[in-house]
Length: 114
Length: 113
Image 1: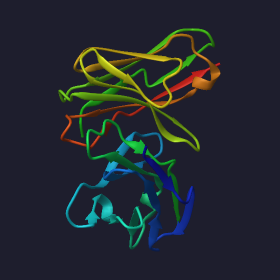
Image 2 (image 1 turned 135 degrees about the vertical axis):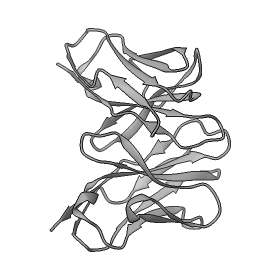
Image 3 (image 1 turned 180 degrees about the horizontal axis):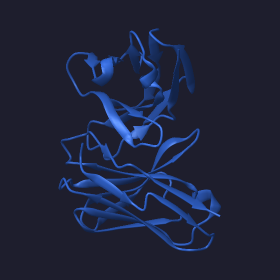
């Protein structure tokens, strides 16, 4: 079975500071990895995904993530955050062999203040 | 974004009453999903569908049933609502087996009093 652990439930940062949201996964098979963002009172929007190829993937809004197979991690980073990045962020995995549904972590709330 | 709508967007109901939530997608996606979102739990899969009339249980399926009579519609039914089913419910869809990305609807906030 697969599981996803988001190591920080809340991350407060100041505007223009860098941020890293941590995600580790557990799986006996290879997986594909995703980060979704949820703004207040909205649905989930895909930030970025790793399916294959370069382990550094770039997404929307200046976010990027690095897949580390040996550490089973997929941490999300942004070099300089804005107030508008305040949201909840979810890491998710799906097995790449006949996987049926995304398995989500419990989420990390990013709060950006001025 | 995939065209996914959910109805109603908000509902308050009493314990013991039946409730049906509707998810509608216009993308002809094969797979559809129902998740519930609760603080501290993230999103948990309730049921999913891999085709018309083909459904299966997810992690938290007790107390819920689903139906999919058309590709575009996926219904979630709470046969007898309980307070523990107060939650935000999200529907999602996915094009097919070779496409792993899921697209989400705006959510339905259900309160069971």
